[in-house]
Length: 52
Image (cartoon, rainbow, N blue to C red; front, side, top):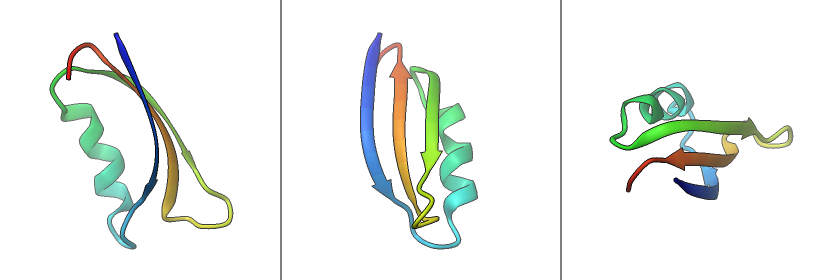
């Protein structure tokens, strides 16, 4: 298993698409996504992958 950590800035208006698209990525196991309180377009992301 591979654990990826990232801080991501998402373009305004695209946050719903951004969140939905993880579930269809190849090798995806699960993720933890936290939205920033100060900036609703910024996320802290932990993704678990079977393969990359």
